[in-house]
Structures are given as structure tokens and as C-alpha cells.
Amino acid sequence: MSEPQNSKFQIRLPLVLCLGLAAGVLVGAGFNNRKGTGEIGKDVQKFRDVLTQIQTEYVDTVNTNSLVDDAIQHMLNKLDPHSAYIPASDRVAANEDLRGNFDGIGVEFNIFHDTIVVVSALSGGPSEALGIQSGDKIIKVDDKNLAGIGVTSNDVMKALKGPKGTEVKVTVLRRDQEIDYNIIRDKIPQYSVDVAYMIDDEIGYIKVNRFAATTFDEFRAALSKLKEKGMKKMVLDLQSNPGGYMNIAIDMADDFLSSGKKIVFTHGKEKKYDSQAISTSKGDFESGDLIILINEGSASASEILAGALQDNDRALIVGRRSFGKGLVQSPFDLSDGSELRLTISRYYTPTGRSIQKPYEDGDEYSRDILSRYNHGEFFHADSIHFNDSLKYTTPKGRTVYGGGGIMPDYFVPLDTTLTSYYLNELYTSTSIQEYTFAYGEAHREELIKKGFDDFLNKFVVTDKMLEELVQVGERNKVKADRKELRKKEKLFKVHIKAQIGRKLWNNEGFFPVMNETNEILQHAIKLFDRMPAELNRTEM
Image 1 (cartoon, one colour):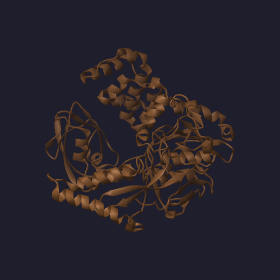
Image 2 (image 1 turned 60 degrees about the horizontal axis):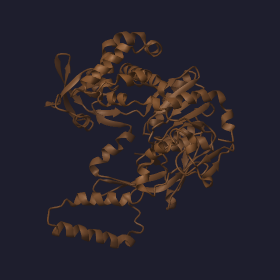
Image 3 (image 1 turned 30 degrees about the vertical axis):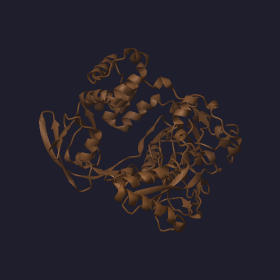
Image 4 (image 1 turned 135 degrees about the horizontal axis):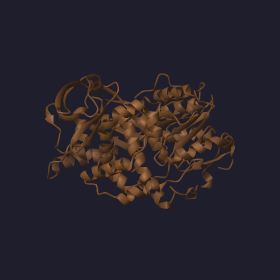
């Protein structure tokens, strides 16, 4: 991890701050500063004495490495919810999502009836180059049978992922023919911008699922594409985005803000961890109307971006109160290759808000989202009570609050009609994936020929298709619930259509359909008619 060379923001040391829901990360930290080590010498000696006695005197043989790992994790649990210890064996996987790529063969797969089915060969990957196709069944890896043995997704990933440049033999069944492929693993990109499309002639929509190393470049490309299509207003969807690299969130904020605006600042016990980010050069979307979507799963870097744009009166925030993660972690390399992520500062929005929710009661912290639901916060904005001492004012006089997450300017309650236990069962049993995959394969040619616009506007999920889905579910041991199906017929049809769209057009075919059930987005679209007057409202 390193700072992008074209990073736009100005920031005092440390140069790069990175945040995530589980742990924010500050790049470049180490154990060079040994200040205070003499003061803890006696404690270290006590710990060494205990380990020595266990190793030499305890009745059974003990793995002291495991004991040390457990002790470290227990210590960190006493500090805060986001300081963490990552064993050497888990370190690569822990950082993989934020790198923006991984090493593998480049296929998206699903498992139907103990059979690994290729959903798609990822664009630009080695599998696509060799001709592996959607619908191919992976039956062997390096001549080891993987079909019909209760294989799991983890089993498949362990077999197929590996260092770039290594070779793996994959045997697929295509119709009745077995085909062997010798695949050289390569870097496979992981995209953090899920989709970008025009909702109408003026409103563009971009969904960002995390802030990874490649996110800003992906975002700029999406922004450019939509501007070419005439975008004048934008919805940036950060719902359930857990965060990631802070410098990426800062760069994105800079694209929306004129020069000289404060974006975020941090404050720690050590002055070296104090920093401030200020917007710099002219951004690519400084003047168009902007709405940010958040919910209880939006955390960390998502909250930095939303808080910066809210505090600068640049965007309306729509949705539900965000997660409330305002602690910054620094990675420290340990001698055995493991990693310590230690909280070293707090971050603050431009008005001075700390949005870290209380964590003194660790059990309560872990149950916070459930507590919000039970308290009614997901359904009624007036169930949220802020302390007046945590009241802040934006430059235009709007009131915002600290003390636990970003509170949206416009609250949108959770719509419980958009949930279904039966639908969840069809998903967890992969029944809906199996049915829509098969339907997409059988009707691919005719649907592709007509094009996505025709699919979006004219394709209708029939009652016959619903019944076929029920039958697939029953084969997968999901008890039919036709009463629930009739009651929430529209919801089931949207999910079926969206999954068929994904099968044929990837995310570009999924999100425009699925967003028909995105109540926060649908509410936000209506607010554009009331901007920019809404950004001048002093009573929020």
C-alpha cells in the first residue's frame, strides 16, 4: 500500500490515512519509535516468565505461538473495537479487498447441486483468454475431483487462487465433453465501482462498494462516462460501503469541492498523527446537484466523504444514520510477519464533529445495529436523540450533529415490505441463482439481440416463471410458500429480472432493475427538484 502519485489533496504528516469498518490503516508505520519501552520492560518480563513456565513445567505440550496470538488479541479487545491483530497466515487475505486485485484464474462461479458452474470468465483474465465459457462445469483441479463431494466456495477458492505466474490444470465439462485447460494465474482486478448509469437525461448514478486502491481511477472513469452522456445531477450511492483507504475518500471529496475547503482532520496523542486535508485543484463535478446515499452499513471512509460534503454544504445526505466509525488505525509489522493494527488517532469532519460512536461497553458496541433496529431508529427519525453539546453549524447555518455516525439531511425509513424470509431461503439455497442462470442461458440469444433497454422496459417475469422458481426451490429442499409469493409478487419478480439481467449484462443489467426496490434512491431522485434551495435550509 502506498500513496498514489497523482493524489490531489494537501495533508500534513502522516501522508496517507486509510480507514475500514474493521480497521482503518495508516501507511508507512513501523516500530522505529521506541519511546516508553523502558517503562513497560517489567510487564514484558512478566509475560516472558509466564510463557517460560508454561513451556517447561506445564503437564501437557502447549503451542506457545497460539497462546501469544490469543493474548495479543485479548489485550487489543481491552482497547477499542477496531485495533486488531492479523496473523501472518491471514495477512494477504486481510488486505486483498483493498489492493484492488488478487491472483487467480479469473472466473466468477456458483455451486449448484455440488457442481461448480462458471457464471462468467472475468474480462481481461487468463480464463477468458483461453476460452472458458459461462456454463462450463469445473469438475477437476490439478486432476483432483471437485464435483459431487460437498465442495464449498472456500474449497474452490483455495484450489483456484494462487501466486501470479503459477500454473493450475482445470478440467471443465462443457455439455458432454471434458476439456483440460492449463491456466497461468494472473492479477485479476476487483472493481469497487459497481455500476455507473443514467437514471434519466440529467441524473447520473454511481455506486461505490468500498474505497480500494483503484477506486478513484474507477470513479473518475465513471464520472467522465456519465458527463459525456449529459449528466448534470449525480447520485453517489455509499449504502453499506464499509470504508477503505482514507486518501481515496479525500480525492473523491476534492472532485466535488472548490479549492481551499477543509475535508477532514485527525488528532492523536502523538502530534505526528495530527493531520489535515484541504481541497486543492478544480474538481470534475464542483457545481452539479449532488446527493449522497448512506445507511447503517456506511462506515469510515464513507463517513469521511459524506461528512465532508455535508459540512461544506455541497451535497444532501439521504438515507439512515451511518455506522459511526471515527478511529484511525496504523499497521505495524511484527517480527514473524504478522501485523498489528493499532488505533492512533480520531478523525473529525470539517465542522469538528467526531462521528465515532461510544465503545466503552464492548458488548453494546457489537450489538449497536440490532439495538438501533429494536429501538425503532430504522423506521422513525425522531427516535434518534442527539446531545445539544454535540451540535455543529455548517457555513450556511445548517445544524449537524456529532456523537455517532452521520445523520442524513433526509431520513428514509426501512421498508419491511422489501424483505421476505422465503426469498432469503431461495437465495441461501442458491435456488434463485440456479433458476435465473438457466433461464439466461436458454434465452441468451433472443434477449441479447433485443438489447438491455428493451429488457429493462419490456421484459416481464411471468407467473409461469415464478412457479418454475418454486419448483427449483423444492428440489433444493426449500419449502414452497405461495402465500408469501402472492403477497410480495412484485418483489420476487424484481429479483428474478435483476438476476437474469446480471447473467446477461453483468452489473449494468442488474442495478437498474434492482434499484426499483432501492427506497433511499427513489426518495433521493424526488429531492433534485428542490435543490439547491434545500442546501440553504437552516432547520434540518
